[in-house]
Image (tube, rainbow, N blue to C red; front, side):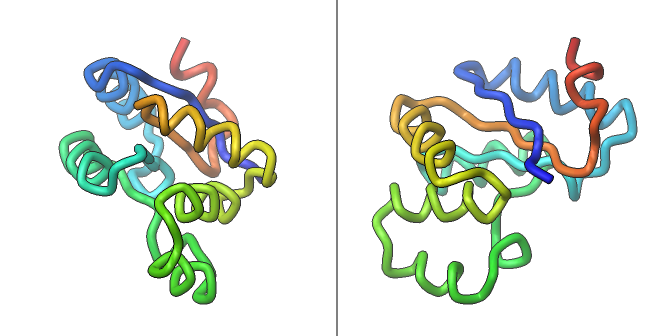
Length: 116
């Protein structure tokens, strides 16, 4: 199943929404953040107490291949590994190029309701 995804331009709004999800019992293991920059992704994930897309979410060949890919290829691969189509991954990667932050939530069909 494809994860819930929402785009943000404001880091504080992202953190507010992550807090809402956690208050509703969504486990940290199901909440992911992705930005165009690995350092920014890590910083945001740490401060919001969420995950990044890493080795456990990707198959081995994709993870190893990402070491040799461009940043755009790596981001598209991560999005495809999370369950998005190639076209969706390309669209989201373009949004990441524009500085947006992606919040993804797996294994919870109530996310939209929680963030209303």
